[in-house]
Image 1 (tube, rainbow, N blue to C red):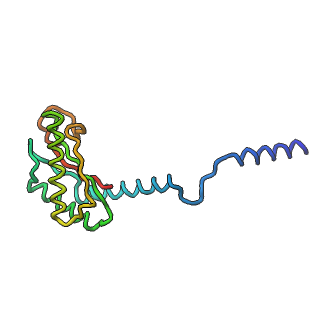
Image 2: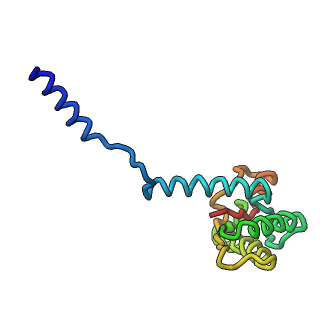
Length: 156
């Protein structure tokens, strides 16, 4: 009998030391939920508006094809007025690091200005340039380079 009571006591003691999952949301769970929500918004944005536009060699002007995508982006952003975005400018591997950072910034700013002119509030848009540091396609040919000359609107 004493052996059974001791075993039961040890079992209770062991179980009381185990961590149980909370019944309410913690800060960590909120972050997971927000990340999931942001991912679904980003997927919806990419599907319905397109998240990137492309540029010509050493160019930062908005082409007519890019304008079509940016009109869709502006419409989507107007329909999701609480969403903020970062516009990332990218370049191909040609040129110096400094030149490509400046060109990437001009590309991101061109997209930002287009969206501002479409009525998107300035406090919802940020820009960053990655220059040639984050290629979408690795390669030393025009097919790769043309995919890397881009601006990507990233939903936050």
